[in-house]
Length: 250
Ligand code: SF4
Image (cartoon, rainbow, N blue to C red):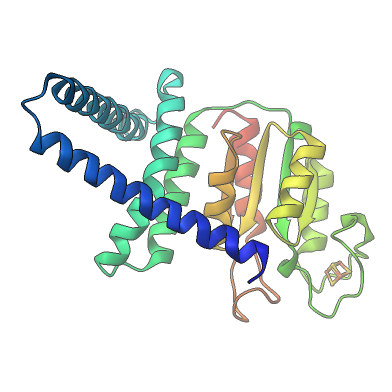
């Protein structure tokens, strides 16, 4: 067995052992609740659970308040981010249990994220914004290496890259193309944008937003007339609207 596989299987086993250990501890504490020390531990665990639930509840309430007020609440931003990160996989699992299409949930998540980012009413300089494109937007027969430098595009007009370069030039915004999450992260680390407009499918966008660690990301879904990951398309006007949202305060 290779080391990588062993690591993952090992972590799975440790997770299971921890879950079993916690269940056994709770069972032991309840079975011997007459002992004072067990009562103290039980009460402490109960307090901890209450604190976690209150914080998660505040996070969800924060999202609802921001949507209703159409305005960000800076003091609740950290807690909404935390609740989002923690509850996101649970929401997906519950959706799966009820037979809700995963893409539908991801679309809804992206829409909530965009709404919250819009409500921050940022007024950034366009030069502080980065547009991050997926490689599949490029015509599959084009031989120019636009992931190295998008200016290698010859503006032939066969795909939307030429229109997007024109948009980026007009607004003096940085434009980068990524083949995946690793390159996307590299572009962000190298360019230090204050906000990102990311184009991708539901899955890549939602994981990118999750990975952004608080950096405002506006997600724009691509269109897939030829199926996933090949000769995809995007509405350039929607990207321009996202640019105005981030630069003109919403
Ligand atoms: S517009 Fe640019 S990237 Fe697209 S096919 Fe033409 S040269 Fe290639």
